[in-house]
Length: 271
Ligand SMILES: [Zn+2]
Ligand SMILES: [Zn+2]
Image (cartoon, rainbow, N blue to C red; front, side):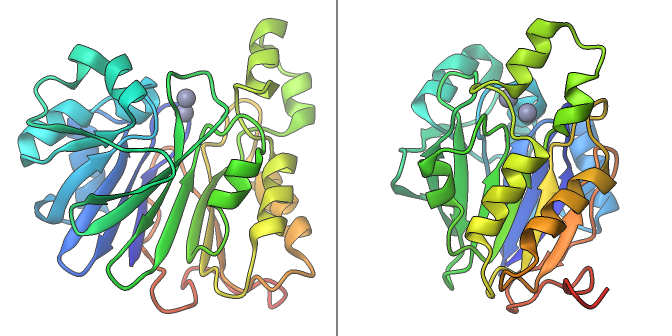
């Protein structure tokens, strides 16, 4: 399976998974035009896209979904609560279909399993996408706080896209009003670097080809802080894959997560 993170952050999230002749878009949080620009910039074609999976209804995950689905003639999959919350905002998508929690749903040439997360949306989920050869990629954005369900979803993956939203010190000293700071750090908000690092250490294993740190706050985090927190936590684990930080503005190079080892950065310990 190949993973291309098209962009991630509070201004938009989207990634593309490819296996054989099929591709699946997970979240479509950029305008349709911007999605097309990023897909082309990554050297990919939208013709292989068989559908769009949405993790929850927030605009930074769904902005371009309806137009993209209509233009590509593909369905949108999301939990029933997310579909209901989006309502008319999914017009003119040609079809929608529910993702049932904790059950595998066939989506194009893939199987998607959704797990509940703690986030201030109607029915938000982390998704695990499996290809026909059993490779599994997890996408965990907007995860609130580390629940047992989240840790379960992140186990035994070939690649994991994991939210590292904020550095706690930067958040506490930020100019956000106290109510916003409380929402971000609270149980319905976002994972901090430290929370994500602890989770990464818990689920890291020798077969995890890539760990992508995503959904970084541009005010309360830096790529260096997120990476350092996770790197520290991974010392002593069996993880030997690629550790990369997603960008809000540009796609990451495509990661091959089908060969057992990611191909972007040097394994930990060899830097
Ligand atoms: Zn959200
Ligand atoms: Zn978000």
